[in-house]
Image (cartoon, rainbow, N blue to C red; front, side, top):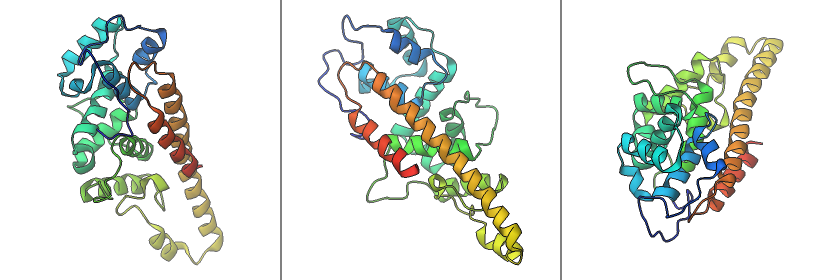
Length: 247
């Protein structure tokens, strides 16, 4: 597990909540709220149950949370928690386009529907990429974690939504930069070219604003977590730095 996710301390009851651990209103609200992010749920689960929970069956994980903390865990939050576990413990999000789409939808707040294909749009891709890279920062020996297949899907999503240039967070996209074609087709018309550029900048700014707002909410959630052993200081510091870069 990346040490930027949660700084963990000694644990006396790995796999179970500590004896007498408070089931606070803050934790209940986060577990039950549809606005809680996957990263928040994952940090809480690791701090509460230990690293062993990453290998638990979904039914076991749900039963432990609901039984020990007196909450009814919504399907959407279980899906987000399982998506975060998948991102952290496998490379499917980064290497498999079909799984990237499924996980991106879940990280963006949609329920997991294995029998339905729902394309992930630009905003969903942008948030999922942002959150996944917080959970699993790129390795210095492999600075581009995304496969060509995934990068081409992101490029396709941008093209479908009429982006001329990828927003900064989606610069990994392949085939998503249409600036050369737009210049060739419309470069002779300065007024139209300026209008196209302005619209593209507006759409990119909307994506980046969604990311900034989401990261701000994520920081607030992490700072509100009453962790027993761990600390989110390094993770929140990294998120704050990301917010500044996108500002």
